[in-house]
Amino acid sequence: MNEENTIFDVIIIGGSYAGLSAAMSLGRCLRRVLIIDHGQPCNKQTPHSHNFITQDGEKPSLIAEKAKKQVLAYDSIQFLNDEAIAVQSMDKHFIIKTKSTKTFTASKVVLATGIKDLMPDIPGFSNCWGISVVHCPYCHGYEAKNQKTGILMNGEVAFHITQLVYNLSKDLRILTNGPSNFSSEQTQKLSSKGIEIIEKKVQEITQENGVLKAVIFSDNTSISLEVLYARLPFEQSSSIINQLGCECNELGYLKVDQFQMTTVKGVYACGDNSSPMRSVANAVASGNLVGALINKELSEVAF
Image (cartoon, rainbow, N blue to C red; front, top):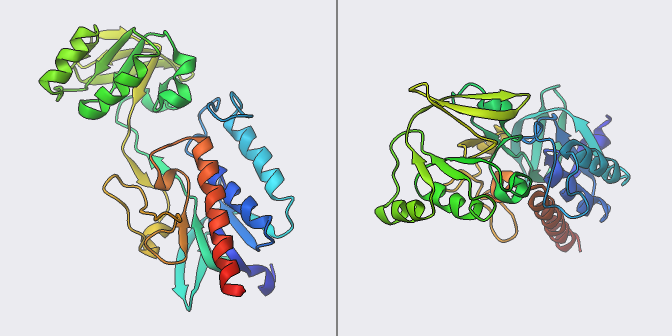
């Protein structure tokens, strides 16, 4: 790239659903946009995407491929297969450096970086993640309806997810992976619904090509299951966030205002890194909004 091709209106870090959606909004307004992506989406193991109209049941990778093709039809948008590793704020502009030693400049930055799920030290768990060990009844629940189901959670979050899943399957039990910490009222309610609370430590998950077979406990007893819901801890997946000084909330998501701007002026966020609603549909919606809001700000400044 020559020098002219290193200066953009907006640099988007992350080229999955949220980043591509933001780019399309901006490209349709003739904004010069660079998308930097190194090809590690958090749902790369998930076989099908659901609850997204026009794409229900489609493979996530095919949705992304189709989106990328449509986005790059806009001449002002460029896509770089690379990783953003360093950022510097200078005179109302941001300088981004990549792993391949390229340098780019923009007045606005969009963080569409997603999050990184932290897998528990349970053999077989990561093999099933996104396939038969899942996080969301809205994304996966219909396909798992009436199946033998477990919920690998504890306390308030377990009770909340159980309420949602109970509508999808009555063949349900909670695996607290240690002593339960439900209130007496919650324990009584779960018992009245015939939902067993299993407090044994989970030792291993047996599976075949990501398809859950059974959960083995530390006392070597086991239970056969077809689907397991789990809520994992996570971390932000890009060091750029800390370098910029963007703040996160108490849950670990990027703080954004009503305009999707982070706590750093000129830096916006969209997708999973700033919302607990983890879905392709939500990522696309938030990216679309970010693109429109950035274009509004650029237009007002230039007018």
